[in-house]
Length: 366
Image (cartoon, rainbow, N blue to C red):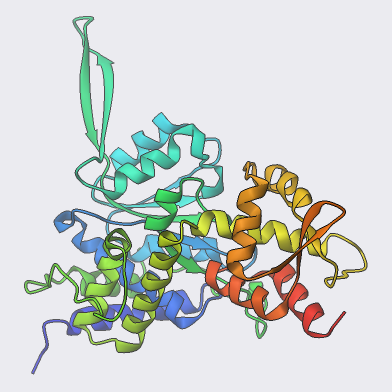
């Protein structure tokens, strides 16, 4: 007997296959991309649609993943954020109304440029409008309203500057696969290929009884706005009975909710942790046993990421992670610890070469 969701399951399996050969990432992370692609075909019915943020080191296949997404998502439109202004971005997003915006070089979208605000507007159908004054043939100016709502897949290496947007973005973390070189990844499939057409056909089948709500675990303390962001993925995982993936998503929702309640966003925590690690690793000797001075982390964050973070906030964040502090010559310092560093990196989703080198050196007692 044919199940209503058989087409959906088949499409997700095929999408997962093409993503797995185009980039490096754990299977559960790649499932986010597969389920997200399936839900883009239901964007017209949605009121909220969070962006999927593809993040990771260079040579991990982020661009290939975006190209593969372009082949199977609903009404995709590629664009580059390099040098783009907020009005230009809004114009492109309006052209992709109720479609899938696929944005390369997302780190060029600066918080103070208005571009992140445009992505925040696109997330919520109730506020996803761009009002623009335009001249008429009669020489008068009238207000034109352009809708912006739709799905978004964006490539970034760093967190969004706006904590509200960062907490509503679904992260997909790519990583280097030690068993294969970057050149061994397959080229993205074409939208005209038979496989891509097959996936789109499977995703296009109407789902008449798809629930609009998710049943959250009663034992978890979850934030509503985080559930709203993950809802498209949670709903599909629930109806196809992908229990492992469903549990993985709920664990991530709980983690993001806890961080929000603690007043520490992924954005701030991840940046401070990166600055802390960079200061540990800056010397040629790689002496990760030395304490790190807070006063040195602050200018590094400003220089490397363009973010001004107070010394008090840096200290408070490192204490929340659990690092031991000392007052040396009147200046606060924090001591590296392999167990705490590993937990903090897992919490913030940081996993790059510098982190691995720091952990290895700490564990070896260097």
